[in-house]
Length: 147
Image (tube, rainbow, N blue to C red; front, side, top):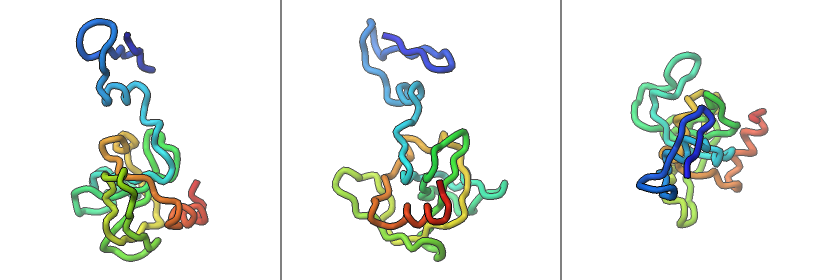
């Protein structure tokens, strides 16, 4: 079995013969990351987060970011800080057992100014969790005109 990607690349199975197991990275490269939902949280490197043609912060490391729109080549995201007040007062997450990747373990503040990040930074390796519906954050962002 072979899969031909949208840019003509051929993906084959790992191992011999027509049937085999594809790696998750190969499969996602072919089908894309269409599983990303509005309200998905990711952990993104600080150096990738751009605001007005400059880095968002000079702290280094990873920052929680919220995707609220459909990603294109660049994605508009909202940053969260556990130390800088201002914006939406966002409680820590307490998910059910299945969300072990959630990094929102402290109270923080989601900033109102959107920033951009390359959409390639939003993937299954950087995914944290989905924002619960009962926090009010998505409703708050939508009231600001986020689509």
